[in-house]
Length: 231
Length: 203
Figure: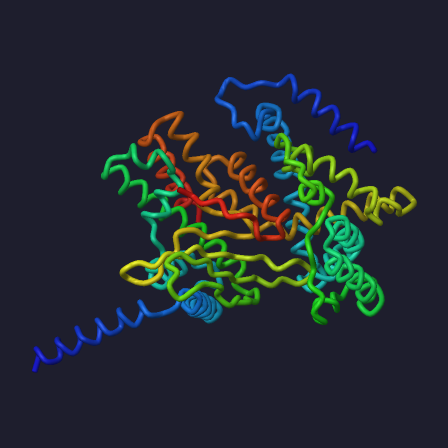
């Protein structure tokens, strides 16, 4: 719920922010977004990245994969629900079966036995479901700490959290620690990718924004978006 | 004798070239990927972070199959027609250097993953196809890599790479357009050159 409040504040503030440069119609709140981006960058440089690097140094790849699998497994019910909401029943059943097999035979998800048995992992969330239902992305949005999003995907994120088993975990301290570990594990997985991004981009903000928007569009169509011919 | 050898050599070369033309695009992608990944796996120098050697491998094995002029033209969009031949040449060179560098980083980061080469879905008469490869990773959805390829007189050439739904060329379009709007085509050439120099100094 607190996330939604933050979101609301950002939207309000975004309405007031303006920049002198020619605006990208997909990113009317660029001024504010760049501010949040800068904050995130500092947060990443001084906290997230060093912690993720230490995490990679201390824990062997094998163990990190197990930890990643554990969190990934907890996402499968949410992915299943979203596939069902999009009318993809076979995929929805696949995801639920993944959760059932991995939680039991896979020892609480640390072994992804379902993939070995031919049940492939999917990528779904409420933002994608809304997109599938016809909602456009809305303005691009950079969320504090979480990074690239859009109005649609930000609202989707709120729904994701309500269905996230992690949100039910009590005491709150334990829940928060688990959320933190999940975040560190995710950041660690992205260490290489973020370095490549930094090398490839002239303007990292623009590069990351465009990549995010392209990627989300592709995900909504499950990797087969109608082809946009580059002229 | 010399002439015969030379003739044979030229004939052999011609045969090699035409054989290369015959290689189907999906087979080409598979062969090149497998060869490069094997080379990286075996080479101690590259494994210990030898960037120069890796770039050498990419220059020799991968680059001949890319059409950098087409890539630069696509990334430039409408601004391409405003560039003069000299500017086009320099843009292509700088963009090429940047892409090679990025490609080298991506390869050294992900070369230990497993690849799943997808069968080509295209008609024999098609001259523009998409070749799909998936990078398999434990506990996550596979990352699809799509190579957009065009048939040319010297074999199939890649003109765009799409990773996980993100077209590399489309992604440079806004950046290029913004820079050209702010500081012209020469400004973009300068920025690309500066970027490449920074990267070269860093290692």
